[in-house]
Length: 85
Image (cartoon, rainbow, N blue to C red):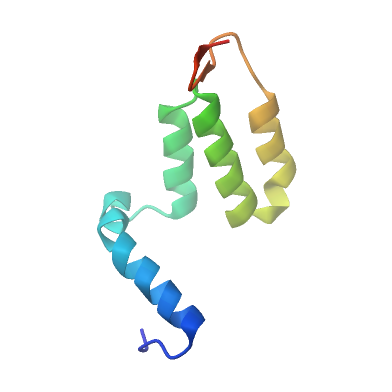
């Protein structure tokens, strides 16, 4: 990776450096696979489902409808940060 030149490149470089330890947690998985595994682990949390949906819409814009459905699909078992619904 080339050394940053512009302010934007400096910002990106800084974020990458700060997040480098997190990247090792992916253990060679793609971000899409990691997002799917995260959803499987936190399926009952509305807050986590919303985060997964946001990442789907960013990483795979063609699946925006799927991301919206992920949030709209709810069950009695979903848990918010304030407790159960």
